[in-house]
Length: 236
Image (cartoon, rainbow, N blue to C red; front, side, top):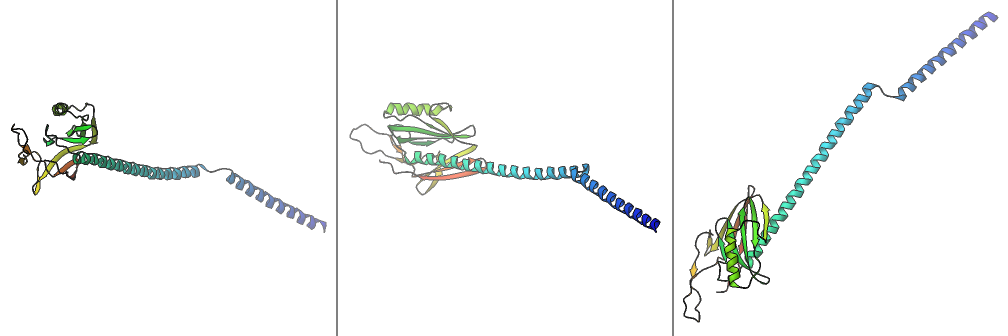
């Protein structure tokens, strides 16, 4: 009776040992799997991270480009508005001194005399080297000084005091004067009116009548920009 029992106990012990061994082996295998990744898993993870990083960089770069383009467009618009505002102020302050031409356009430059603090100022708007420039003389009160500035303004080089580059990328400038009932080329002669009677007997030369409006057509890049300005009435 003892022999079958011992055999049963031995078989039962071997079964327990085999189960314990299999459980220990499974535990060690699971522990090895938890301790690290295989090379294939690492490569797949790196590939996914690289693709996601590239997509994120492209999105950030597109946002930065859009922001820079928007900022440049806003800055350009502000510069154009500032330049046109100065152009309008110069024309609305037009002053006819009758010692030099008050308003003249020769195809590339418009010269005018305007009222300024401290006297009369000569202003020249010109198109040169792909830019729109403004030159303003000091305000003067003597006729000789104004005539001297007028003579000097015929040969401006761009480095004189009072010179300012107002806008870049300006390709063309055309000016029209409003006379009578329509716009006419500013380089054409205007209406000539007789001067008012003077107390002296000395004869006086006839003067050209100023227009009632000025139209500017300025080409910036490929875009023409038009601005109409009404001039204040001048005393006879």
